Amino acid sequence: MEPTASGARPRLTVLGTGYLGATHAVCLAELGFDVLGLDVDEHKIALLHSGEVPFYEPGLPELLRKNLEAGRLRFTTSFEEVGAFGDVHFLCVGTPQKQGEFAADMTYVDACFRALVPHLRDGALVVGKSTVPAGTAERLAAELARTCPAADVELAWNPEFLREGFAVEDTLTPDRLVFGVTSEAAEAKLRAAFAPVLELPTPLVVTDFATAQLVKVAANAFLATKISFINAMAEVCEATGGDVTLLSKALSYDSRIGGRFLHAGLGFGGGCLPKDIRAFMARAGELGVDQALSFLREVDAINLRRRARMVDLARELVGGSFGGMRVGVLGAAFKPNSDDIRDSPALDVAAAIQRQGAAVTLYDPAAMDNARARCPELGYRESALEAARGADIVLHLTEWSEFRQMDPATLSDVVASRRIVDGRNALDPARWRAAGWTYRALGRP
Ligand code: UGA
Image (cartoon, rainbow, N blue to C red; front, side, top):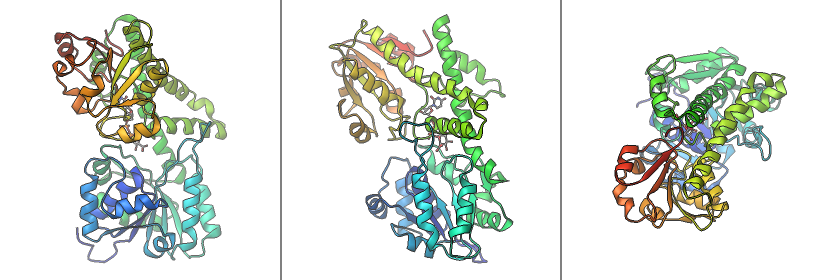
């Protein structure tokens, strides 16, 4: 894409090159902007510079290499270089859960912001994209006004809604854009930075700081609630003999309810939904509105109960004790098409079962290295077949298409017993049962 005739296309920088930042930097370059990405991790920057994405994200490596070759995308570890280069700076660093607390850890956002501010040029716009507690934008804007040596520098908030596994698509063609701004000048700069996306067209909501920050956590809280709702129904199905997959299907035809994020199973994990609902509750407590979000405690509890139920069901099926049992686990990532194991239900279950005395052998198409680093005590195998070899029970915990399409007959010969628990309600029970397997799942007979 060629620059606009007016030459008004801003130069963009992206600070933090994790899932969000690396994707954002690459996609902005793909949209035709000159982009400079920054990270304090020299190893990550060296990888990106050489055309390697430091995590698994379908489609991203190809776009990275294309835009490096086109000369639109560069990476650095220098805040000075970023400040001198950019008109608009996107803050994309992580806000993990604080150790031993529900609240978000703001250390990285604050450190990155403070390192950037002294180097900003006159007229620069700093745009927060990280998921933060309400009030952060107001705090950073005040600090910017107080400490930045440059003139006409402003802050804006632009939350991000990308899903891992679909990050490129979600960034290039988002469902909506949200601009939290306090001036028309900031809005105009953001519009210029998103011009090709706005032209698609893409719905835009322009709002104040507080709303912009809340949209993000409200969206994740809603999605988490929807998943926990159907998982609560799964618990009731287990008590009544109902089938949650059919219940969900029947609900989904009501367009007011819809079928997305209504898939019952092992529940939600990852680097966002679990920690975002907890940070949201923590912030609500500080704001004196904890009652408004007390239902999120139950959302979290339902979600974690699914993991415990999975362990109990597997133990029940092998005769009441894991002692001396071999358990084959398919999947470690928190969802398919990702190598992310942060708060992964699959890995959590595998580790719990190993702690209860079983020998767990695990395979995941992309998350092996991350899983091995987090849980070195588990046995890692190079294929689904090897993970299942000699198993007294096989657990399907992350619904990669490789597992969904697996022919039960291929596993039949290698396992010690034909028992499978489908933690994601993604296998065809009739097919597995026809091949002589005991098939069990969460929320259905
Ligand atoms: C989530 C949101 O979907 C994004 O919109 C948001 O931008 C992102 O968090 C973020 O805050 O950065 P992501 O964590 O990539 O994206 O994963 P999701 O696709 O939302 O899945 C989350 C978890 O829910 C997974 O463990 C998945 O297996 C589980 N899930 C999802 C279900 O158990 N059932 C469903 O019906 C859907």
